[in-house]
Image (cartoon, rainbow, N blue to C red; front, side):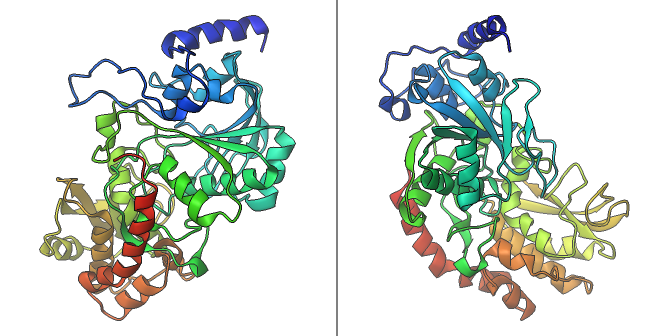
Length: 426
C-alpha cells in the first residue's frame, strides 16, 4: 500500500478511535477508559472492548514490537471496520502478519475448514493458517512470520466445544515455545458470565473441541480463560498481557454491550444461537440434524422419521425458560440435505432461567425414548463433546435427565473453584 494511502487511512481510524496516548504501556490493560456516552436503550454505558481500550492508549502496548494478529471477521470496531485494516493503516503499529483460525481470517470456510496460507488482498499482509496446528508446528509458524508479539482478538460464544478458545490455548503454548509475547484483547461472553455449568472434560477425551478440564458452559471471557490456561494448564506459561474490557458486567447478555454482532462462524448467526449452543451442540454427536443448513442452526433439531411426539415429550418436562415447537425443515447441506425432517425448534422465552446444557441433555434423553432410529455417531464424537463417556453410557442405560446432570456435579464443583481464582470481572 502506498504510504500516502496508509496515512490517509490512519487519519480516518484516528477519527473513529480516539487515541490519547498519555498512559504508559502497562496501564492499557488495567486503567479505566473514559466513559462513553450513555445509550438510552441500556441501563448502563456501553461496553468498551479490549481493542477499543488498546486504541484509547495509542496502541502503546504494541510499541516497538513486530505484531501478528490472530483474528477473523469478528475482530471489528464498533463501526464494523476490521481491526487488521485499522492497525495496518496506523503508523504507530508494525503489523507484519495475520493468523487465521478455523473458518479462516475472512470467514469463508465452513466447519472443519480454513483458508490456507495466502496474502490478504486488502492489506497485502501474509495470512498464515493456524487451524489444526499446535505445539512446535505452530511455534514455527510464528517464528517464520517474524513476529515479536501475537495479538488475539476473536469473539467466543461461551462453550468449551467451540474451537476458538482452543485456538487461544494453542497460540499461548506455541508463543511460549517460540519465545513470543501474547496479548489478548477481551470481548464479552455473549451468553453472560454466569456460573459454569455442564460436564468437565476428562483429559483422556481431549481434542480440538476440548484440550483441558473446562466445563461445557465455562461462563468466562477469553481474557479470563487465558488466565486459567496460563496458571493451571500450560507447563511453560507464556508472557501474557490481557487488555480488559470496561463496563461489562457478568450478568450482561450480548445485547447489553451495545456492540455489533458479527457471526463468529457460518452456523452461529445470532446471539440467540450462542445461547442454545452449549446444549444443542451435543446433537453433532448423534445421527440427528443439529440444524446446519437452515436459518436456525442449533435451534432446529430433527431427523427423517420423527414426528410431533418428540416436541410433546420435551414440553412435558416443563424445563425453565424454554418452549418446544413441533417443527419440519429441509437442510440445504449437512445431515439430511435436501430432505424434509421432523423435530423440534427451541424458543427461549426467559434467558435468565434457561439452562442450555440441562436442556440439551433432556432433548437427548427424550429423542432416544420417542424415536427408534436414534443413534450416536459411530466415532463416538459425543464423548469428545461432553468430555467423557458418562453422558452416552448413562443415556443408553435409561438414565433420566436429573441422573445424568447429577453425575457431573463433583467435577463441576472442582472446576468452579479453579474458575473463581481467575475471574477479572466481579
